[in-house]
Image (tube, rainbow, N blue to C red):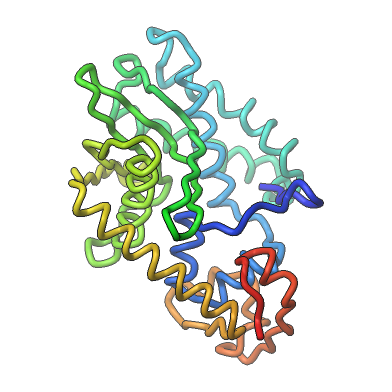
Length: 282
């Protein structure tokens, strides 16, 4: 998506689940995205994720009886038009109309998988694409967007997050579960109730993973978030955002700036650090 620019883009320093995962994966990646805000070229996988999320949101705008797979797939082309308006660069991802059509069809296939997992005609989400923001007492500002919040007749809350990729192996799912607990923490601290269920729906392979948290789980997440933010602030004060090589490095757009790959990291701008993190190197 297009990144906002100008004064409207300046927000108080804070932490989202995605950027928290970035820092845990690689502090230098976090710096490039949050502090330097280096532009990254669009990717077909990320664009497809945005497209499918948009369609799944729009499905629930339809009357319950009209929420069919055919209706969902009919929303793909209009949603693609909206995506191009928001970020014209995504149109450059495809060499020709055939490649684009195949990509749009792949989005339709993911929607097909969704309909094998849930029947949206039987669901009435309480909230969709909900922006959450909460400041921990004496700690960082947390922010994020939740795909869907369901509320049962007894008041129980379920947080649902769509993933357009495949479910990770159990030993690699900690990042996704941390993201879910992050959302659960924000809901708990902003609204007072522990969500009954945190659920991940993987459309790449049709798996559903869930966790039914208790307050102790979210307290542990809060401790982890506070510790992580302290590490981020320390990196900002010292200017040391150390690279961490991993299997995900080949997907990073700026390997030429990473010393792990022979690149030279640009000088750190203290003003950008202060704007992004609320601390200043020195």
